[in-house]
Every structure is written in structure tokens, then in C-alpha cells.
Image (cartoon, rainbow, N blue to C red; front, side):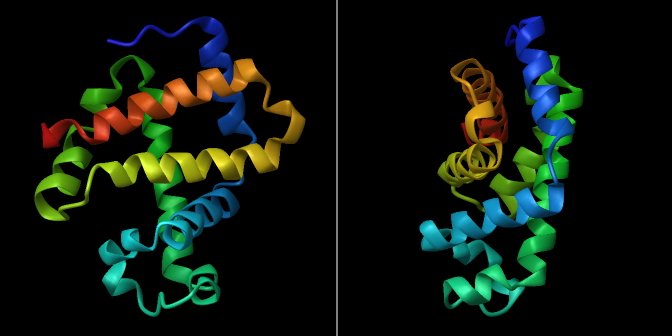
Length: 147
């Protein structure tokens, strides 16, 4: 079990309270699909993903990005039990969707870049430490069923 300080909990809660889920979700998933094009293979049913412009304009990608951020809400609300909170989602991504677990880390990195750009100087070292810890626990939980 991960130990969270009151400060870390407050930082993570603050980041989420200021997020525009539609904007940040879309930008994060689009960035992941553009920067790491091999991740597109999991989105074959989402239509044309042949170049950056079509990815950025794809409403299915935008909606899925928003869905991902709302999925992170579950981790926020269950910070003391993230692994069990994501057990079913991990199973879905490993057994049914066959997503390479490293892609969770890539998406987390893209999410961090987008949030850093949005927060600017408000993303202090302390804030980044808490955020990276949170995302590391989420990524580990999503990859749990692969082990």
C-alpha cells in the first residue's frame, strides 16, 4: 500500500479541481497517439488516424481522452486502494484489449506534459513529485494483471 501525505493528497486534489477534462483529456491522448504512433493500433475503430491533423480533429479520440481523465477520478477517490480500484480495468486492458502495459506510462508522460503546459510555473517541484507518484501508482495498478 502506498502512503500519501496530507500535502500530496491536497496537491493531487488541487490539480484535479482545476482540470478541464475535455481539453486536457483530448490533448493528452492526441499527444500520445502522435508522439508514439504505434499506440494507434489500439484505436482501429476510431476512424482516420493517418496524421496529426486527423487525430487532433477526431471526436472519438477526444471523447476517449475525456473518459480516461474521468477514469483517473476513480484513483483520486480511492487513493488508499488504487490497485484494487483498477483491477477490472487492468484485466480488460490485458485480457480483452491486449494493450501493451508500457503504453500506460507513455500516456501518463503525455498527460504530465499537457498539465505542465497548462499549469506553467504553478507546477512546482513539490507538485510534480506528488503528481508523478500518483501517476506511477495508477500505471502500476493498470499493469497489475500483466504480471
